[in-house]
Length: 473
Ligand code: SAM
Ligand code: SF4
Image 1 (tube, protein in one colour):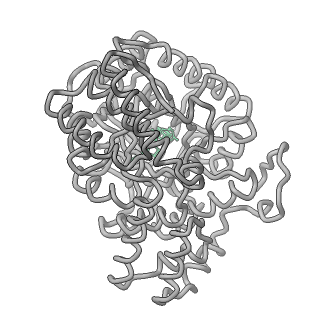
Image 2 (image 1 turned 30 degrees about the vertical axis):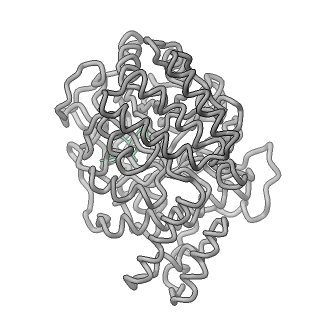
């Protein structure tokens, strides 16, 4: 690794290039997944330990259907035991699709002359934000192509604009970013605008495959990308999201690499990523991808369960790239955040036009339900939809780690906060039917909270019913 952050004491372990193909392939070819070992590894994760590369390979190499079932049960149990039934909701807001790169899988690639290029003007960004607030959203991720126009000052200005939009009872309380890697100064500029998470996906950690699919522009530089979040850390951003785009190379290698990336952050900065994303490639205009590494639904479910067990303290994001069925199915295996009412067209939220037009989108969406439809289903399935941003606004960083490490944190902080933000949604945006099942669920889930906190939560919900907003613990 060429880039070495200056302000940290770097252990020897972290001085090596942190993705070592031989090391990862060595584990994948040599580790034997015998029954006893698989069970031991699942138990280690359930005891709140991150798994090593060798242990992750034990789970990856397990192919016996009974063991796979045990891995899935382990992930289910971990989610239930540690995180409870909350699912955090957010929306992506595409700000602009100008792009100088040529990523073979993406509809925004520079060589795609068919796509309609657009960057939101300030007034359009305000309109998009208002439309999302009108749906009930409180958390957004702003998404950008890679282009000189989307420089750090521009991104920071977009963040400030979004935070300033208040429509009726609506406001955006957390703005995350998915944009190109920046230099340290650039990350500082964006950090100062008050972002939540800066998310960058490595796409594939396998350097030869990376070279095969990144055919032009700055993104061709594997090293610049793989060290991007180190620069973010050095700029003071300790809330980062990592991810791999599944389907470019062997999913087993990508899972191992994600764990290696986590392990690198822990070794160097003493903190892991806030979230892990695991998008699977979807159809995009002019896409040219070797189907050899397409991930089947069966493998996808297995890999999500393995990631949940391997890094038990991070948030796990599952987007509307996946179908309704897959999302419903995966919710119990440790997913903690999903998007709802998603529209990928630049300016699409304010337009009220919901048919997909691939000439205006990065890729095809498979779950185009409205936010309310998604909330209704979560409620019916016993999950608490949450728009909570309390930790971030209280300066409680490392939220997922605290949920994981501090006894009673979820039960007495996260669950009540989820209910308070759900109550706001039910009062301000929900149709009658959702409101009814929402309050029924809150009534039921209040019983799981300690008596003192339960009484305080009920009191705050009564205040919400009288019009007071933004109450949290
Ligand atoms: N342009 C920035 C970048 O490349 O990092 C950020 C935005 S990009 C629009 C967000 C992510 O979308 C990419 O990192 C990639 O993983 C994902 N993506 C691109 N094409 C996709 C496709 N066809 N199917 C699913 N996800 C895709
Ligand atoms: Fe551009 Fe990002 Fe799409 Fe690559 S993935 S073409 S960088 S928008």
